[in-house]
Length: 250
Image (cartoon, rainbow, N blue to C red; front, side):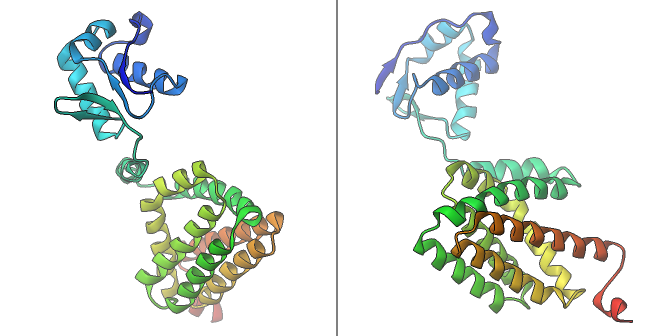
């Protein structure tokens, strides 16, 4: 549906200022009465019907423009657009950067996302997905002694797993955390300086995950992935208390 979209006046329950404007758009987007390509009525009329001042309305619309919800076009008006979900990555990165203990919490979210995704990947992955996973696996082997290249290869493998699950929601959630996840992969690769035995673990665990997906076994795929995360946690715990392969050997 395109063209000017009429609205009904919101009552006091709609909130004030920004909240009223945001509530109006949120409710109509969820209801389907506002869709990408629709044009809002002129600012003067919209402000009057929402019961807000025009300066407040303009500020709210500018904020929604930054979020990618609307686009303000000269001589055209305010157009509803399909949001660019990639902005969530920047949002979460900035929001979580202010919390020193956020990585562990994000890791729990990552485990939940990837464990469901790997089950779906075992059911839905295509030949192209297998090829992407195989390429990422080869890169993990090639970059085993390169912290920067290796962390990127690790991330690409896990992103390929999520993409192979074909769940748009899981993909969006995983991508939105990608900035923090990259940091997590980099930290894990740094552990290779302390635990040389991690090299075989990294390679073999990713190979087992790949084999489980190719084997179309959702239960086994999830089990292997959870074991992969658990072993990684154990290495981090050992590093935190000052252990290393050299000390273990002695």
